[in-house]
Length: 135
Image (cartoon, rainbow, N blue to C red):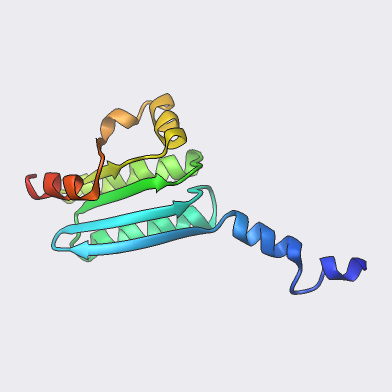
């Protein structure tokens, strides 16, 4: 029945929403905010939510940002721009951004566009947090 494609509970609409879903697990401690990102960091709602989260952290005094990107299978130019914008914004207020275990594709993309070297990359959140404390 064709009407199911236009109904509110359309499986097509649900799949599109789920396709671009991103989850953010946010932990704040002192001047450090850790964002564990799960899902595709791509143009639209995922990048908007990511930017809102780190801007909120910065405005709350968490000037050191740790982005755990292990569970990010895909990043596009908007996602890369957002990560770089976080670095730019945090350094303006005396902070920094550390990356934790970026997925292989994410590392390759950041390296390909020439921004990977702007970030310190760590194998664990604990090591990144210790580096923030020593800054």
